[in-house]
Amino acid sequence: MALIHCDFKSRTLNTSTSMYVVIPELGPEEKEMEKPGMKFQTLYLLHGIGDDHTKWVRRTPIERYAGQYKLAVVMPQVDKSFYADMAYGNNYWTFISEEVPKVARTFFPLSDKREDNFVAGISMGGYGSFKLAFNKPEEFAAAASFSGALDLVGLFSNENDEELEKIAMGVFGGVDKIRDSMNDLFYAAKKLKESGGDIPKLYQCCGTEDFVYKYNIKFRDFARKIGLDLTYEEGPGGHTWEYWDMCIQKALAWLPLKRRPV
Image 1 (cartoon, rainbow, N blue to C red):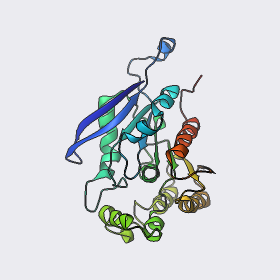
Image 2: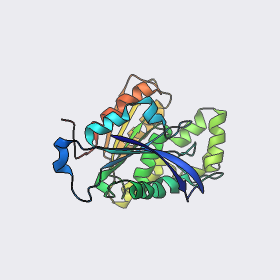
Image 3: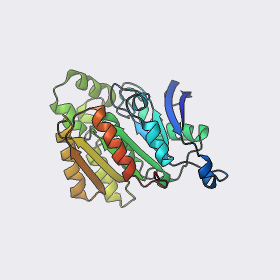
Image 4: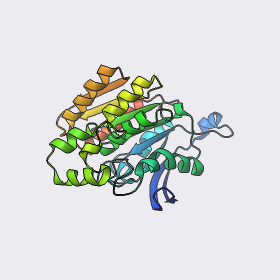
């Protein structure tokens, strides 16, 4: 595998930024897979609040996991944006949903076919993963959320956390601006379901000791009620990398990937 720390100038953010990218290497026994213009299936792997593009590489053996599946992995940096075009800040939704895939495919041999693209993330990134699935369903075949902040209105309204209140105002302009918008996963999922269009397959897992567990249960029940294709798993665990390391391995086994470990 090749692990590449990619620094580039973002036109959307109007600043320099970074992403880690894992690119598979094909061994001698896999030469028959090599074809002119071959493009890799790609997982966009999103970080949580307070983390950055390096966190998945630093806290899990994601490079080794991706190598088992010959899967490319793109890990961008989005600050504490909740993957949104911020009310008081940068346009991170436009960045993650439009610019990052275009830039990554310019630099690396990544497929642009829907069936070859997936997204996953932890906490804030789990929210971002489902947000991309519901608002850009034509781009992704599947999405996975690990301990995701899936009920933002509930999270920002009930946790009585001053830092979360500041983030809600800075990112969205206040909690009241989230409900019934593209940033509300319940609204976005319902709108997509009613459209009759293709909906990405969903994988959701959360530890039963996690403070976001109750918000995950609420979304799980809603998703089942409206008939989304959701695979849900839970078990002992908190908001920790030990739990998420297990989740990413399960999600990779669940994804519709072309190549499987021998």
